[in-house]
Image (cartoon, rainbow, N blue to C red; front, side, top):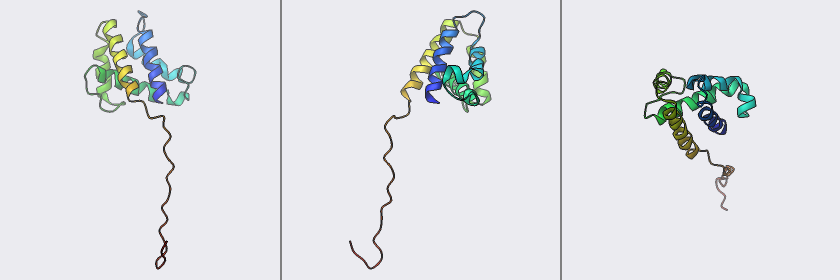
Length: 123
């Protein structure tokens, strides 16, 4: 999911160059094309969209709260009023910050149960 959100942020930045596409329009289109564009099941497209939106709002210095909350919608509405160049800068900032928080690729060590000696016995 993390990689899909990064891909979406990259797509959003590129698509903002189109005069007839809004920030929320690009984000909303992701859920319809998630499987093809993001490499995730289409039902997860809304999750990538919500996470990307929250990251953009946070990059603007606003409190995003829950990715599905009202604060994200209000933040995006305000961001859409900015010039496209500023919107693109916020998306780039969001992508850089989100990339830094990438989950570790190091596999976790398997948990091993420590066996205790039976009562009255020593090792």
